[in-house]
Length: 297
Ligand code: 57M
Image (cartoon, rainbow, N blue to C red; front, side, top):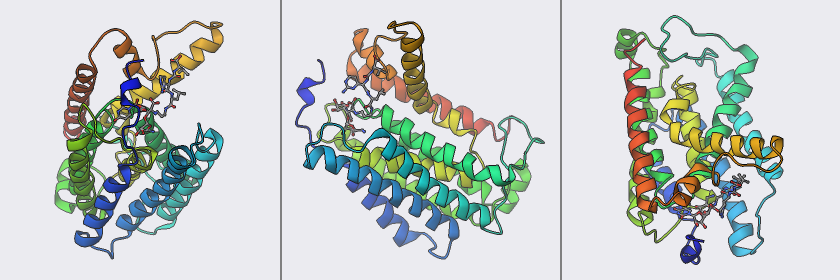
């Protein structure tokens, strides 16, 4: 009910976000860098999926856009292609990092590709579910991009990586620029998406932004830590899984007043800006904790 006043707000602002990210990256990143192209490939693929979905809903006026299965399948195909290219790239290892544990670094072998798909597709859909209040998705996206900007720098710096005893991924420091572009484009978008929003990002924004963050998490070898850095996205996705699961097994009862969880707090009577800012506070705390895991190991 409270969202009815938002009807007619322009959407697909994600086009502007993604153009800004691509332009800044193509202008300032080293274009001989393999990882830059992998992340741009994944971002472009999810951009096309999101664009098509929004096109069906906004322009063709179909009520549901792409079918959930169709959308998921396309996401898996793009993420699989990206994961497979990383896997066969000779300089890239299929080992992963376990947060807080310095000496545990399992080699996933072939399983690395489905693992990368899980991280990329999972992050993309979780960001999409979060995108239901003004600035609610883009705030934590900016925070996560700034966090991974630091991870990319230290992971690609042979001396700092050695000092911190983390994986050194030669060339991944270039992703610092791409993450900076995501954070900068996100800030520009937030200017207009801040409550009361003048524009929404649409799937054309939420899907590629999540996928780009997931891809950066994979390349910087801080994949599992995405659960913490993107804790707000995880919370939103888990609230939906629990709500739907409990609804089915309990024969129609709910855990939350409504999922995703931001609707629960709205229905509890919190004003929209209060929900948004509190979720940002949680995102900042989680990002700071994530950074501390570089030393707390
Ligand atoms: C899309 N779309 C927003 C905007 C944005 C399984 C179920 C949990 C799925 C979920 C769903 O469909 N989620 C994905 C959510 C929509 O925003 C558009 O979509 C884009 C993102 N993909 O960029 O273009 C609306 O969100 C609001 N909004 C803002 N500010 C923003 O900056 O206020 C968005 C951005 C906008 C605007 O009102 O129109 C959305 O929420 O629809 N479904 C749901 O989230 C539904 N939940 C639900 O059914 N819960 C059930 C069960 C199934 C879990 C339950 O709890 O019992 C809610 N969707 C809507 N109303 N529309 C329920 C209430």
